[in-house]
Length: 459
Image (cartoon, rainbow, N blue to C red; front, side, top):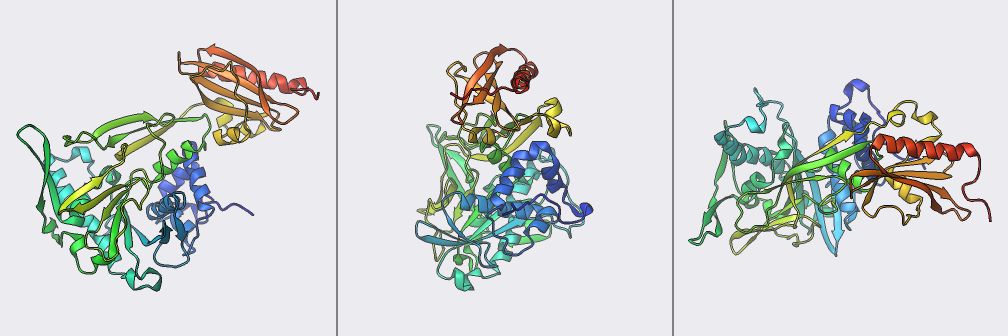
């Protein structure tokens, strides 16, 4: 059976979305491409136009939909996409829910569009954006979905409707966390106060409406007519190319030709904190293994006819009302927003058009691991694998490692024995330069190949 390919263009090149084209062609996007294609293999295309929209005008909304499917299908839910509406019918732990995805998109009818960066806004302009513009931006698509009355569909009767939303309305929209959406959904705005001994008290004030330019909408979405059928609203600002890149990298869908770093802000566990914490880490060394649900926020509707149980959405932060107050349950490491940057590592011929003619090829990490090579006792304990190679007949393997003890380089060569197991046959430690270590590794592998002898003679 042929694999489905999201990245084989099916439309004229002039119609391809720029973000799609970057994801398709950039070699730093290889982890994202491979992961997205893996998810797409069992993704049911109910409408029949997913690939066309993913490649053209619907890239943002479709990658968010693919992300939701990745999360649901890889987090223990039974997923049903047999109906045109809603996007997902899911069951977990005997509890069913209907999930409909939507996005905040650029408004085409606006006479002027503010293209300034977030850092260029004044304090007052930023406050206005958070308290009024963004709630109104969220309100449009959420009310549009509410008017679809999904609860009247046979497949949705008696179960909570969940609206999942992500914002793509402008450059930089993904840098905003869920706070503006929460204000709009609950009709409350929080502010800090302190006890006499200096401990934080979170207080709130009621919001009646949001005003932005000539637009005015009522606040408290959950309190609006028919919103009682909505069990929860789920928000993400990470259903993007970057998420697929990180998850692909974590799964081993990368070679030694990229390296990445992630920076952003995250939840501050200090009970008296009023600001988030900054974080930064190399993609090779995350503080926790990233899950598909990392970054999701669930807002529970206190007035829902059919409640979504707390904990139903795996790995998500949750907002809910208890004793008249908005409470939250947050995972220990919870990013509010982040930026992921992958940069190329030059490896000469292996990243050129001539790579296919070489007797040795570069492997993805997961391809190398799938061969189950045996590790050797002489390899430094704190050495981290960075590049992987094999001859085209898979007789010998090579790995390049960084020794974290003193930040120098190591290589190992492994050969297939008569039982088919790859065992250590050669190696070198304490090489100062990465390129030099790679050259020595490849020279050693080529010498073995040119000898024409089996690595391990038949006993």
